[in-house]
Amino acid sequence: MDTFDLKELNAYFKSNEDLRLYLEAQKKIVLPFSQQKGITTDYFLQVAQEKVLTIPEAQYKPFRGVLAKKATKSEIHDQLVLLAQGKSTGFTEGRLPSKQWLLDCLHSLDCKNAIFRRLEEKIPREFPEG
Picture 1 (cartoon, rainbow, N blue to C red):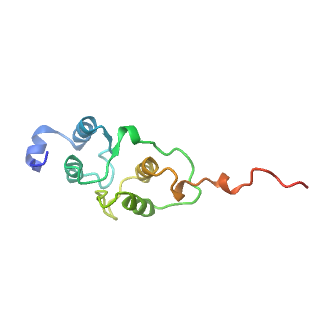
Picture 2 (tube, rainbow, N blue to C red):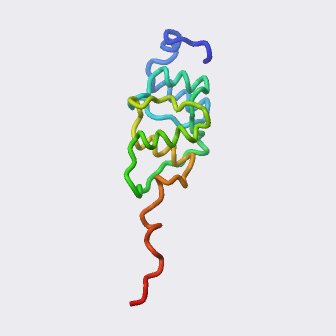
Picture 3 (tube, one colour):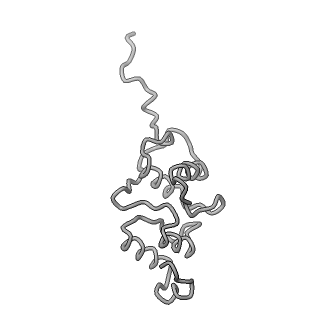
């Protein structure tokens, strides 16, 4: 897909969702749904050319817990940029996908990140005698 332009791409795929499904199957990665903010044909082209950070299916671990402290989409994205090791995430600050998708990506790459520390870690396991 290195040389495809948008006109050629539209001849093969009728929607961005079709393109997403194709890329996921061919590259064995997990991508955000195409209806999310920041998910464009250009983003999928970058995925196809391996210019952006992606999560392999085998490494994907969705986050289903409760955050110990609130984190904004921007803060989560900043953590992903640090983990990308020089690769782009493919998103800009004003065009970030859903917070859940960003959390799932971060959890897949670094499940011990400070954003995921649970509230229970601060509660002592043994109660004082009294």
